[in-house]
Amino acid sequence: MIIRKIKSLRYYFSGYLFEYFAIPGTKNEEISKSLLKKYLPNKPVIIDCGAHDGSDSISLAKLFKRGTIHSFEPVDELYARLKGNSNSYKNITCYKLALADRNGNMDFHVSGGGSDASSSLLEPFDHLKDHPDTFFKRKINVVARTLDTWADENNIEKVDMLWLDMQGFELQMLKASEIILNMVSVIHTEVSTRETYKGVPLYDDLRSFLEAKGFSVKIEALPTGWDMGNVLFVKDK
Image (tube, rainbow, N blue to C red; front, top):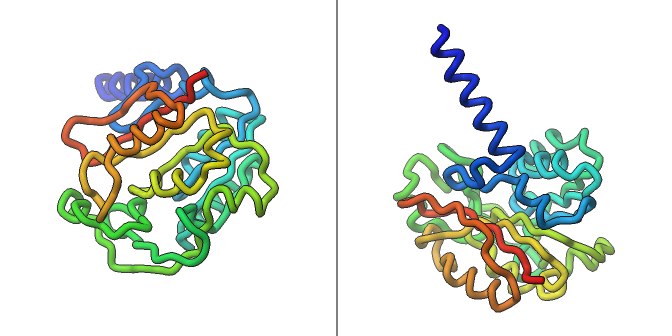
């Protein structure tokens, strides 16, 4: 019993250090959000694209209580969870939209089984063998907007950070978002190290694009052997 309590306290304490003090800075594929305070103002405007059930949006809303979080999730049932979970956070606004590389309606591949967080505008490929417990039996039609179009339609004049979890569609969306990308200073993005989805740009492609736009890698969370991870980019001063 005592050993179990000690292990539980150790687990809690390590999670606390990671979440609030970035000790360590990465854990598996996660990057500690507390690192963001070093690079963002006290009242940042943050885009959470691929918000799923709102867990990241809520963490960001807690971290930046005076900030504004715009959260995007196109799947009906996940959007309902996002709305329900974030309802008490006045600095989170939710949108049932897919951010993409064009405006209109697009096919969206919905994941289920082992993960309902793997849905994508791209058709799954190696994901099917790397994660055999996750399946894609449903394809829906979703409303899509470029980030620039959405900002114009909603009178958004400032964006400080992009938090991207788009299952391989990050680079396409960024290339269609020149206006917003020029004002963003921080990007936390999921990256692919192999072809998890058909035609997905790999990490080197995304990194080259962002470096050409004046961003530098600050920290990588790319576990050995994993098909995906996360990277924090910050625009050079």
